[in-house]
Amino acid sequence: MAVQHELKYIILPDEINLGNYKYDHLYEQAVVKVTGSKPGTFMELKGDSSTYGVTLIKNAPNREAAIAFLQYLLNPQGGLKVLKDMGQPPFVPCRVPTAKMKASIPAELQPLVEVKD
View (tube, rainbow, N blue to C red):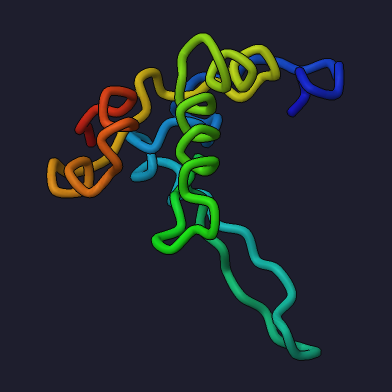
């Protein structure tokens, strides 16, 4: 986001930057106490990685347009390049955690994702 807003920033190592889900075991060691939903109450929040996901609605009213958008978004020279250029480096190719999940993706999108934890 700092890149998007042309702010000054420093690059932190993956072990502390909240950008690599493989370090969630480290991120969760950071705990902050914040006010709760009722006066005088508090809750503790543990750190975890900040990653984005995308989905195709099962009964999308315009399925063809939704698939066309996802083809652009998941393309390394299209939407993924835009994300990278704006400071939101994506996984290239995009990832799904299981072969079963990949099989459930429309055939047009399957070449744009890999199975990887």
